[in-house]
Image (cartoon, rainbow, N blue to C red; front, side):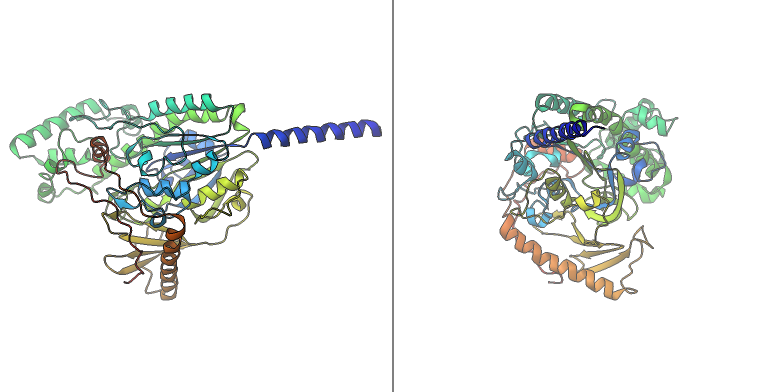
Length: 522
């Protein structure tokens, strides 16, 4: 090739690179955070589930960096999502008290506020409940529509009560079209997978071909009405009502459901019976199938050329769900892997897909995003670490991560846990004792390994003690007492529907209190 042609080619390439650099400098990457409430990683194909629950999420994961051992800072919605958005643990950002966590102190800086200050359009679309803006999630968002109470009528199952997912997606897609020509930060959240599990009948029948919802629901209503009228119910009725406990209330509120409890022992019926627990797992998997199918519309839009080349997408769940592994169904009170392990995958232009096995926490999301969008974070008080080295294929060091269980009323915490590599230690504040689990040899966390590994247990307990001191210092510098927030009647209906509270015996929630974190053992 003649020298002049080579010089011309190099000049053209340089100009192209310069234009691309200028264009990138003028248009920062979009950021999308998708929060799938209550989603256990092990119920997705990409994390090893044998059922075909998640073809669209699995395809998305194949082009993403998938974190196989991500942990949540808290196994319930409000504190977990705020840890994602602030990179602070719940005891620092202050939203940890149940059922009225208050509203986060405005001194706390959120990811939305940082991006908005850099001229990002900011929009959030959630299913309400504990993902409402009032708890602090709204800080920094220009768009964050409120939802009215999502409460089923009596005798309601999914036959009569569709969830909000489709409507929420429609609003989200319209917002993307409105702001696609400027940098935007989108936060999308759905409660679809959260109990009560109300998937479309077709999704249940894919897993249980003989299931007929109308017939079974009619029989359920008949049994419930008879029980409420007479106070009596036979074994078949007890089993049917218990089976549908996580599906629909069929007219029996929580107080009236107490009529069943003495009958369980009388008839020898347990929630762990395969036909009951198996049905709950089928409902849960069916909810995942339904959510996955609906998300395809959002994924297709994000993969279109005008967004795919300049959009960072984080998919995360706020917590998992227990199905009897440690004697409970649900989440919030126990610090085991079924509730603490979460989905975390990140897809960004120029980042090759890979799997990351090291333990990380959802407080790591914000610093990672800020590094990817080239926003300095030295002036921000963050407790998470950037995962960008892992995105590049580097091995992450074994850094301890912490979790905090649901705290009732003004008690700062019932349980705390630290996870480092293969080990998890759980401290129970009421019992003033700890348990140590070896996640490699005992992934089900069934055997306390403290006696065999006393030095490990003491070292991890020391990490928890040190973290208390760190959290206290961060509280003074980064946050402050949460503000009072009185739940509305619709809020209470939503919390009741989600299974968090009972509104048949209402009482005034106590305002959140801001107390120094006690040292362990005090």
